[in-house]
Image 1 (cartoon, helix red, strand yellow):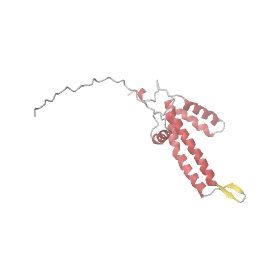
Image 2: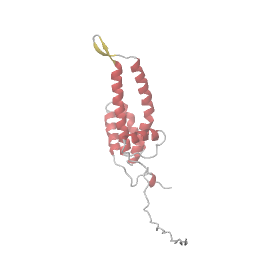
Image 3: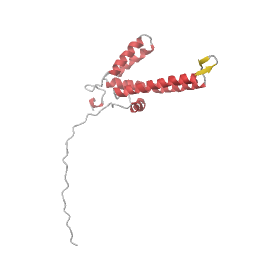
Length: 172
């Protein structure tokens, strides 16, 4: 049997293509409400200096609103009982348990909510000192104006040029 020679070929070397430098993104646009709500809890206790996109902020607000409606429905179902005189709302053990769980949830959600508001203000290019507008929210009359101002601030688009709160604009 004759031996066949193996022909050795040179491996083709692909030329390296220069890639464009990518600008790092500080805030992530969450298009899925579950990812945004998970980020609300994950980033809420530890990140105060970064930014949050509008989608992350509003998806988290939406899920918290849905949870509020579910809490209201649970209170209604647990508290309404049928009496011989008709339906009546009574404080029973189920209502007391729901109040306790809602209280714990509300206390736990305060810090992530404040953190999210601070990051949203940073994303819009504003200082976190604007959060002081939340102080008069407990006063009647002034609370409406302060809440409208905070709503407008949270609706502002992302500001990347000259925004000192974005990572890629910071001096290293």
